[in-house]
Image (cartoon, rainbow, N blue to C red; front, side, top):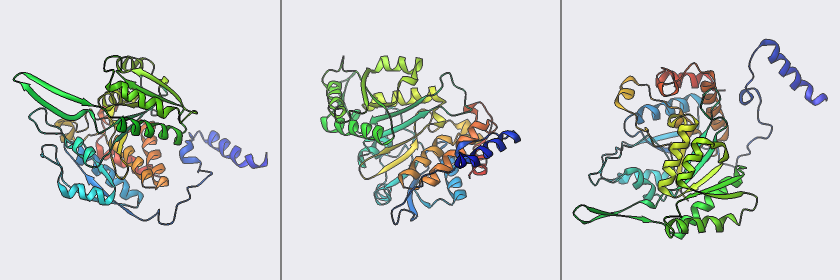
Length: 372
């Protein structure tokens, strides 16, 4: 009883003053992070501001990092979606630094210009895309307690880019699914669930129609699932999955998908949980990682938002918190994430997509003011 007295006094003091207590800021971790020697050394990160609102939201991240005195420095490169390829010096920078933070890159519609986003993933073998879609306190949505992690295979499937015109007016596009890529994305999903105390992994597929391609993906997921008996495993057809997501999203935990289904599922889940402007994400491979806004819809915004400087920086700020954890700076990640969540919960500073009228800079200033 004596040990709990200070805590009781603290709670009573907060109640008597009418001050709302926020656990993330009022209580410290009881178990601290024990770094390996050298974990605190400053890290250089490749920065790609990108197109549209990209420079605005990456600039927001830089301001917050500087305000926290985070041990991160940025090596900036101008890359734009209308380029024919990712510049060699940019790829060399990411290979050297191991980590990249990027804004959105516009992908031209048609015309034979390949997506630089896809090029980056293939060149660096960033085979796993992770998008975390979760409910934020103070942000009202139709569904509560949404907490879904969408993990998609990032290098093959319909994104293989193998298309040709057989005869005029007839185009053949190949979907490639391999045992190797299916197994490693399944292993990544189950390993993520295991390390993050997640209870269930759901494989999303269309094996009732694409029996060989999606059948191979399912076969791989089933084999990997047997090695993780403590994690529930189930499967769902992609069209039923979309319906279940919008009607009962709380049933999902970790979802593992082939390439195209993953981007559809991630953007749907993001919309349910509060919008693409607040959902973090990243792409990771064996040696490199690129962090960006989680859901791709609207990741470059529109000209009006850009001109008014009212882009929502929350998604990229939360993605940069993911990056800080990846770099083994967990205390900085906690501070940043807590500050962002306090700003959202407060409700006074929000951009238009969240029902407010704040500018990007006003959100940044509010986050900096809430840094502990």
